[in-house]
Image 1: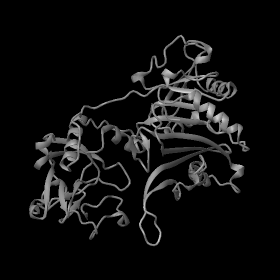
Image 2: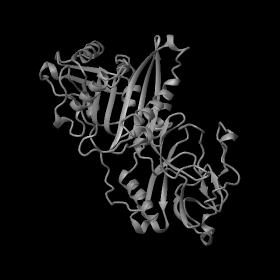
Image 3: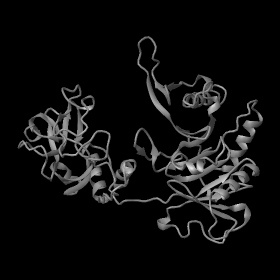
Image 4: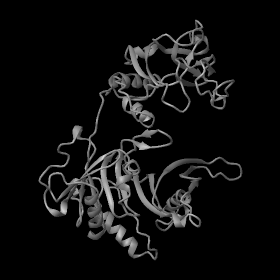
Length: 444
């Protein structure tokens, strides 16, 4: 992309200029289309309106679309490149800040050999919710107010234009987050956590069976199931139902009907059996906070440090599915069903910093996944599972990789470690997303 109006904090090392090996677009893309762009920032982000052109209107795309823009370019000579396999699919409606009389193509489709590439200067893949999350660290998020139905119609049309199948259900959907269930191997560890959280929170109704904890990014409403029914329903009085409901079990585990996709009792039976047969005194996997659907097992801990400081090493959060799983930078995604999704708390004293630096914990976590797979049962030691340093796990899917032969690998696990520090301790949250063989109705 040729650089247009210079951003205020211009960094030549980040500019995308000159020839490109891929060369999907045979013309020139010049940017930024609108002034205000700043590298690594949301300061210049803005909405823009795209007028849909070409074939997309015939396969369900709306006539226009308002979407997120942050520094993208304009394909200035796209209209004259039809003979070279270029199709204009959308145009910027507003006047551009590149005033040279060139075109206003915002999205193009390019025939490249036997393939086809879509190139878009704006970001129609970002919903209002995603935009707000991207802005969260740089100030108060604005209300983008995008029409989600039109955005989904446009994205569906793009997929169809690529020859892919896309359903026509473009109605925005919102799945309610499930209640969370806190239980453990024994009543003592849960009772200790309950007492700490009671001291940390408040019981505004005078109800001894429930407590409210106001953390940094969420409100936790905890109800002790072992002390009898609460006098108020979980979530009462919370604006927009924004609280996270947590059912606490000092003794026993959730009923099967409350956790239809995960048998907590069976999980603890296996954990107890493993500990009994192990010579190591490592106590991980309990207490367990389980939920069918939550935003992110990492974020619920890492982003609520007030709560995190009260939790012991080994405290584990497990979910069947996440709606905002975390990746690099501000990336988020929906985790697939059938994956092993969990995060674990590790408290690491600073007195160990010389002999056991906290940074090594992410490497140990990755190595432990490989070791766990290879030691799972007889014959598993030969599983072609490998660590891609430092924090991804891959499995060989085909080929040998020997004598010059090519081997194919697939990523089966990603690990994300977040660290906080207070007093003389590191509070680490180790998050893992692993592919898991689905054993029928329940995953263990």
